[in-house]
Length: 554
Image (cartoon, rainbow, N blue to C red; front, top):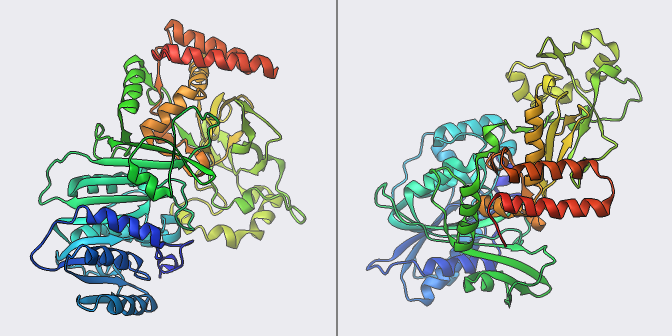
């Protein structure tokens, strides 16, 4: 049983606000082709019927005949939806079933007829961690997906299977699939099966009460696996910039702003938004992140990449920090009964310790059950340490609930992602996973790195120089602009994700070039300097040097 499937908006996506439902229905109406017979519209996660009501209303106003089908696994939703639709659209055939759109396929009952002309949906968003490892694997195997999945991935595949060739799909989903590594399979699937008409990243505009950031996908199912040109891509995010020099537009609401299809800074009431428009960038492979290709972004990316010599991935492996999946135990400071012996404790850098290019303490202490043994990772034996054994025994039930860890043949008191303690002693570049500004810093303390950060380490003097070069470039405003245009991964409140798959693609100039040497020198001086006014001077010089290295003159 998947609880979030039928919960209210803050947990799943059963309910769709009327303005958003109307917006998607209007968009779909512009692409619906006239037909001699009534068209079939469907919503396989219909909830309270808001999307079906909106689309049926637009079709009725346009004089287009239609029949309605749909499903939801909650009978109270289906009963309510049938009643609402029947009262308003008595001339249409209405077939709303109480069924689980995904479980039918998992149970071997999947045999969709391709009968739907238009599918409009807001399928539930439920990530792997909530689905549970066993159920997630069953879904992944059945639908040919890899990595971490979300429940709306199989929904998209099932909806495609039930759509006629040439039929329309209009869905509201989490925008995570646009840019995450786990979304590569579903991006490739959509490219194979659809002529993409519009992608609208609604960003942090908060059109409804949910933790996810939504996006709209509209596509026409291809009659065969052929190539087709990309279409419109629009994004809208809250503006956090103090720079108001850009052209300021006004709008009634976010849907009014999106429909203007104009780049720039918009004001809606007291809130400001940045809108970017363009086409879907298809320059990468099928699983590449989806980002906006505009004249401005293409020009900047082309200029920077024409001057690069390498990418970070050519020199370093980007690693995520340690993950215990039981922080309440390993980060505990409650040792009223038993405190593990000192050998079990290590300092750890968390994202709140990274500020202004520096590592700032005090660093939290974490229980870390690993040590280096002749250049290899080894696990501390709790039978040798009575206090540690007593402490972990107190939490044994909690730790053994991590069944995925036990199945991987790890000891029940180990970490899910431990990293290799051999590497901690080397200098490393550390940065926050989520941040509104780039926050990269060099660490010499040998501290561990928390799972809310990423890191690379240097094992030689040449590596250390490269880390300083990366530090200067990665903290620059130019690279933040490149990051936004290349990876399109803004989150809420102007924050970005600095995931490994993005940072490892950062371009680097030839370290032997004069420009790179200048960045390296200035960055080292910046790190050594502790006077804020002088640091600001170094920062501006580093910015200028980074621009010069990549041929940016304005």
